[in-house]
Amino acid sequence: MSYSRININNFDVLRVLFAFTVAIAHLIELSQVKTFESYIKFFNTRLAIDGFFVISGFLIAKSYENSKSLKSYILKRVKRIVPAYTVVVVFCALFFYVISTNSFSDYFFNIQFWKYLLANLTFQNYLEPCLPGVFENNLICAVNGALWTIKVEEGFYLLLPLFYFLIKSKKVNINILYVLIYLSSIIYFNYFVSVDMYRIAKQLPGALAFFTVGIVLYKNFNFFIKWKHYLIIPCLLVFYFEQYIFSLHVFKPMAYGFMVFYLAYNFRWLNNVCKYGDITYGVYIYHFPVVQVFVYFNLFNNYNPYMISAVLLLLVVLLAVFSWHYLELRFLSESRKERQRQLLSG
Image (cartoon, rainbow, N blue to C red; front, side, top):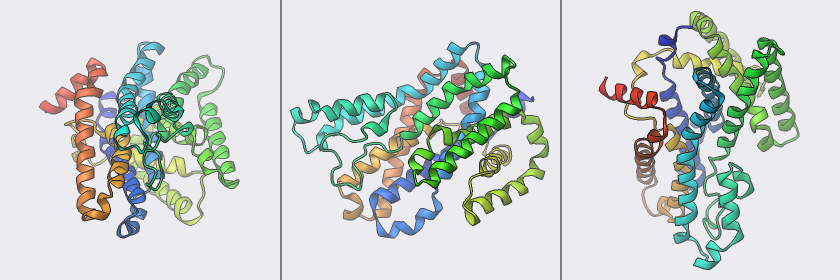
């Protein structure tokens, strides 16, 4: 595997694109601005999230193999995810009292407040997505509806060492394992969609097909790089027919996963677009509560909705940049900090 070649990619750009796709889709949905509704077809949150999962499969497999130990691997994952996540959950819990319809005692001594904190800090956002008296007149009361994917990511991070253990112990052939995981994920997803339980279908078992494709792309990097221009057309065709003609979910994770890989390893001029900071995580975890606050203050109706949207997105970017440089980066490894310094000086 050519490690110098594998590290030169557009994954940062793709993740930023996916993050803004989710953010703008939520803006359109939550703001309920009629003139925005026609744009929603251009911002498919499901494809954006699936793209995140493919990239995670690729990069986390790489991170695991480059880790000195299981402890080192887990610490890297915790340091990358938990600090900013904890800040956004706790900040919203404390400061949204200001916009709550509840009194001080009815807010902070309300069991819903503590249930929100406990559920969200343990990545179980679905148990209590709302705070007492907050966003009651918005479309939904959820403080941060984007956080549900974090528990899916965390679940994958924990499963990955198990996959490697099974392969290393030679109890399972590597190719058989990937096929079994992929097929199980496809069956799980399609079953729950068939019984009209999409919210269950999209959880970790249903998402494993995309993670697995990311791992396979990483483990067979040289093969896919060599044949990328020959594989992209068949993948585009398979994706188009399954996504837009037959509404299937069988080969789509493979096809879409390779499309993400192809974009990551072409168009070299995009390689250093994100050299000033990885704002992906910040955009993803901060945008939802910001949109909810803007809706709460009725800003989309009182002012030009396009201007307000631009201000909102700029604010999210500023929060993400601040978060990256003053919160997220400080917890990362020295090698990651050095990489950031090299990008800025390059």
